[in-house]
Length: 81
Image 1: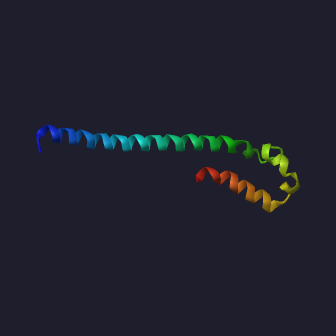
Image 2 (image 1 turned 60 degrees about the vertical axis):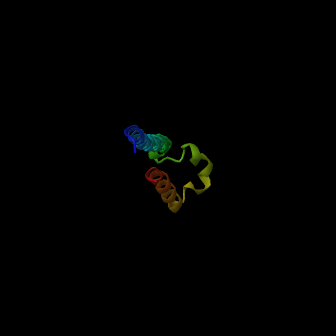
Image 3 (image 1 turned 120 degrees about the vertical axis):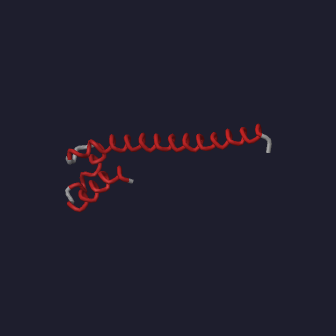
């Protein structure tokens, strides 16, 4: 193999690694962005009151203890997924 071909081959190998790093960085940024959105959506529920957004429509079941435990478990663990 000629030297110029080997140099071009090495350049393409380095570009492939850079491309993988670029994609990995984009995926990490997307994960961070959507995690931020999920936390922002979850914060109003930390008040543990029945008058918060979605809970307005659940007044008939909010008084049930097992429903509240399930709901708050679902909301607060959603950021971990």
